[in-house]
Every structure is written in structure tokens, then in C-alpha cells.
Length: 91
View (tube, rainbow, N blue to C red):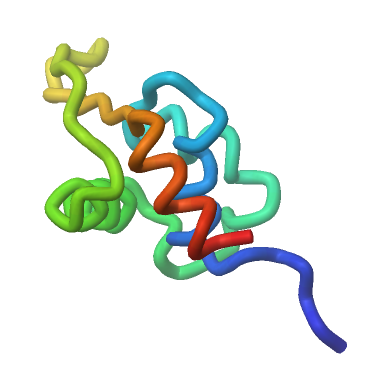
């Protein structure tokens, strides 16, 4: 049986093609229904994947703030060119 679920990192990147901005918590909230059982579905691994996507030019850091526990949250966004790149590789 073939699964229609995208790999987790692909789903994370596709999220940025239709949302203006998000942090790891935002992405995880939306993806938890399909991906919460994945071993990579942890905040540290999601943050690492987002930082990797940023270093590869697929998304950009947009702002920082502190969450309720005083932890730094990094927000990312994808401009039109970045969205086009993501969409050209992930259908």
C-alpha cells in the first residue's frame, strides 16, 4: 500500500507555501494529526529542520520572540521565490 502522506520535512516546507509566518510550535500544531507518531516529530528536531531549511535558502528568519516559558521562538517565512522553489520540488 502506498501512503499519500508526505515525508515530515516535505510537509513542513509545504506549510510555508501557504502561510505567511510560523515557528516550530505553529508547524507542529498543524502537522500533529498526521505526524505526531513520527520519531522526528519533536520540537528540537523540528527546530533543526527549520534551521536547515533556512541555511539552504528555502525559508528565511522573519522575527524572534519569547514564549510563555521564556524560551526563544524563531519565526520563519517563505517569499515568492522560495515558495516557487519548494513547490517545484514538492508537488
